[in-house]
Length: 237
Image (cartoon, rainbow, N blue to C red; front, side):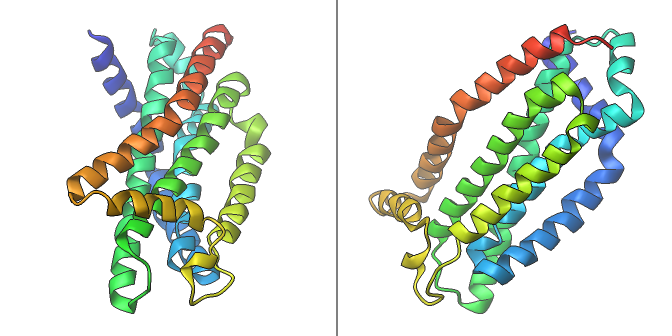
C-alpha cells in the first residue's frame, strides 16, 4: 500500500473516532464565537470563529487519542508513526479551510443583508489573517501534543486560543465604528486591497491570496511538522 493510501486510510479512522464531537465543536462553538466576535467588533471581528474553531477541531484527534488510547492501538496495528503525524497535519489543513469558507460565506451574507461598509477584499484579507492565526496556534501546539499528549496540556490548549482571540478582537475592532480605517490591522487590510485593485481578474486575486497565505505559513508549518515527526518517533507507549 502506498504512503498516500495509508495516510488517507488513517485520516478516515481518525475522523471516525472524533466524528461525534466534530458536530458539537464545529457547529456550536463556531456559532458562539462568531456571534461573540460580531457583537464586540462587527463583521470583521466575527472571524475569531475561524481562529477558535479551526484550532479546536485540529486538537480533537489528540484528545480522543488520549481518552481512548488510540496511540497504543495504532502502534499495535503497526501504523507507521509518520503516517499518524502527516494525517494529523492534513486534518489541520482541512479543518482550517472549512472554518475559513464558513466564515467567508457568513461575512458576505451579513454584509449584503445589513449593508455593512466592508468590501469583499477586506473580508478576504481578514479571512486569510484569521486562518493564518488558527494555523499558527495549532502548529505551535502539535509538537507539544505529540510529546506530552493532550491531557497534560489541556490548560495550555485552552489558554492560547483565548489569549489570541482577545488580541484578534481588539485588533479588528475599529475605534470609530463608522470608519474602517480605524481598525488597528487596517494596514494589512489596505495592503491586500491595494494589491487586489491592481489586478482586474478575480481568479488572479484568489491565486494571489492563496500564494500570500502559503508564503507566510510554509516555513513555520514545515518546522512544526519536522519537530513532530522527530518527537513522535521517539515517544514510548
